[in-house]
Amino acid sequence: MNIEFFRGKKIFITGHNGFKGSWLCKLLVNVGAIVRGYSLANENSLFCLFKLDDCVDSIYGDIRDYDKLKTSILEFQPEIIIHMAAQAIVLNAENHPDEAIDINVNGIKNLLDIICNLDYVKSFVNVSTDTVYFCKNKKVYYETDLIGGYNVYSKSKSAAERLLIEYKKKYNRKFYSSTRCVNVIGGGDVNYSRIIPECLNALNNGRNININTPENRRPFVHVLEALYGYLSVAYGQYMEKVSKDAYNFGPYEDDYVYMGDVAELFCLKNDNVISWNKKIFDKNKTLEKYICIDLVKKETGWVPVYNFSERLDLVLEWNKVFISKKNIIKITDEQIRKFLERVK
Image 1 (cartoon, rainbow, N blue to C red):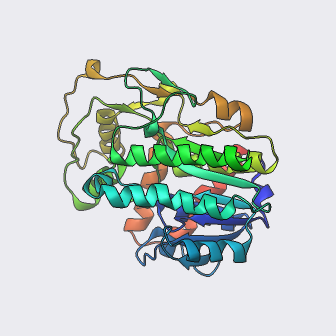
Image 2 (tube, rainbow, N blue to C red; image 1 turned 60 degrees about the vertical axis):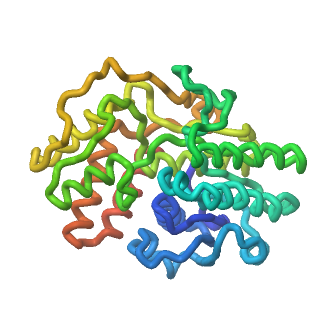
Image 3 (tube, one colour; image 1 turned 45 degrees about the horizontal axis):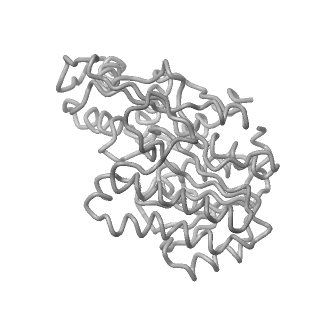
């Protein structure tokens, strides 16, 4: 895929001022796309830090507000829609299950009801999660495996995916797909329930890192890798070459990392000025689980670009600029430019 394809394309993004949404808007604006975003207002968002208000047409509203969402879409007439709006924090979903289900399921239903008869929409990408898989005892997970999840968040995202499949069948919309991505890291993520934001918060506040399950082995990709994957699917749909219900995104199997090793490497890269709370852990307790990425590699050519150490370096580089209150837009643009050079 040539990223220049998106120059001049009209792209509608829900949840555009979240962590991934802000990076996606910055990436698309940098390549000359015409972007309209729809999300709840957030004056402290990464989107504001990137100063994107002047170059992205932002509509602030609830994804459950059908009339406002419909007007925003019909006025804009997008060619590509990337649906990222969600209640994505697992703990919040557990504490407020009705709201999480309402947002994650009825939100996508509103979108599908609006666009199912719009022929100018050539591509619909639903951003989902690798946690939708239901089977506990499998080592490798494929897109055809049973989904259903094990908590409110993953169950609601599974329901959203199933709804998407039903609309595809009912309205013969082949080019609608879900993207199931692993953990995403990058500059500006402030969800401290995640490992890297927890590490950064500890570093920035001079305390030790808290790791509850150091023996867990987890996959990570950088935010630019994930977004390039979503755009690869969108491009393939637009060109009528990509039409599967779902696509997995993650690192190569040998690049999965133990949470304890994440903390250890983080401390090492910061000259061990901080430590972490459990330096001995039993890797034999690890339940191996991998997400197969063969399908997206075959159909779109997408592959992981970085290894975990490189991904962590990018986050630390961004954080250093942020903490020193230097030019955050410059470092973001530089990371995007270097990434795009690497995927050419």
